[in-house]
Image 1 (cartoon, rainbow, N blue to C red):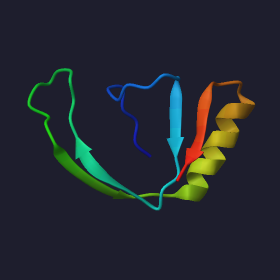
Image 2 (image 1 turned 90 degrees about the vertical axis):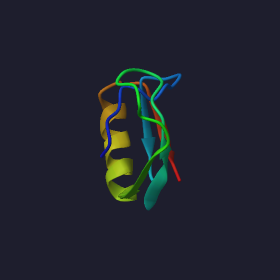
Image 3 (image 1 turned 60 degrees about the vertical axis):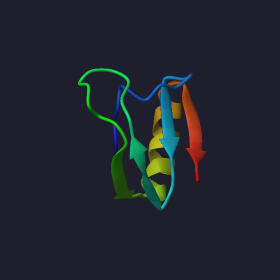
Image 4 (image 1 turned 120 degrees about the horizontal axis):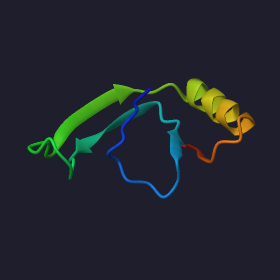
Length: 67
């Protein structure tokens, strides 16, 4: 599970459900110097779907899991 307050979204929470999540991270906020930092993490689609259902039951605004 990755929590990040620096990735801009139009909703409060986003849940993704890929088997693997990889890319390049760049932060436009301090600390400066985080540019195109590679990341590659295994995912857990079942955990993502379970968390999505849990936060919905709490009344939280959340985007549905995406693959």
